Length: 429
Ligand SMILES: Cc1ncc(COP(=O)(O)O)c(C=O)c1O
Image (cartoon, rainbow, N blue to C red; front, side, top):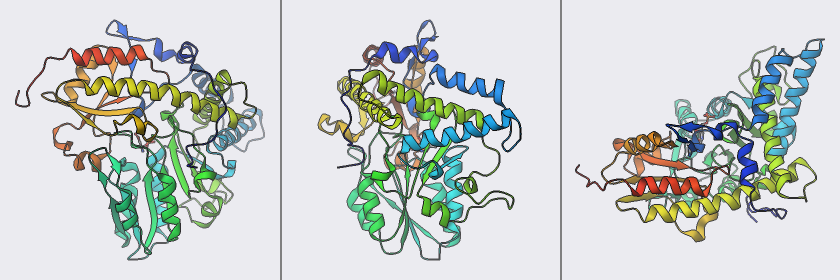
């Protein structure tokens, strides 16, 4: 069974009114129309409880750690609770959870540490599908004599070419860095297989779960990865990066750290003073996800079980929305679709959809929609290898429509109506 296909409790159909009431931003209007947030892969909106947790920390508990007074003691508790919340989210131990500024900064910290033990001729594998956050930190290690190889994609549906990936994992491979899901086109990769192949040659694995985390359940035990990293601003929390590392790897590798810093886990990796208010916000985001699970299923006892149920709810709803959106888009004249469209492969994609429409640049499309209160992204979203591979980098990338569980069928209809109403333009206009 794949790590993403856990047995989950029975859940009710999404109570979308309840969900949307949790998010104050969703009540906004833009240019006189209800705002439609289809910008989730760039960052999701946050529920009220996250806003409350951050402001409560700053108004009541703001202090550094280690003091003999109540605000400092409370701050320590908040830090501990955030590690426990993320351990429930990852299905790991709290001391295997490392907080940092964001995914990119954490990944650079680990690439510097891994670089310390590389020898000339060692190889690292990245992919052509991924965000540069899981590419450049490894390419930097070429300065130390390592060689970076890149696994290709099948451009027809933007899926990872697993034969190419397998062929490029060799005895000299020290690390395989793969995204769980592609932030540009939504492909979910078979990371379980990539991890199996990497471990078979003794290589470490570094999984970028930033785009996967709002859409799919993470279980690092089932996955057996060495490292996995995500960012809570993509899953209803504040701007904060979080990494899971296997305990033996976190103890074995040598971080770049201050002499005065503790050698305990996870402190040896959490350099400097952490963002306590955002940690309080992360706990609240995880509690929101668990609350979704509890609201839609009575069969949840622990927070982890409630999280498992929540992802069941997210997936049922998101797949329905993605299906509606993909079918609608495929009927629009002059539209090029990048990624999986086959409904039989709905479980191999997130509801993140990339397109172009003949005669319009992606920026023009995003501007047109933005003026009508529909927020989408245009560009390469830092998936630069992919934009180049697809030949769209020089012409503005793609229009990205990124759904989250708080979106509705009415919102998808509104977007389709706007795109259908666009005057047809030929390429040369
Ligand atoms: C798939 C993916 N990986 C990595 C990142 C970088 O994350 P961060 O902004 O936390 O550095 C992003 C951000 O968009 C992303 O979508």
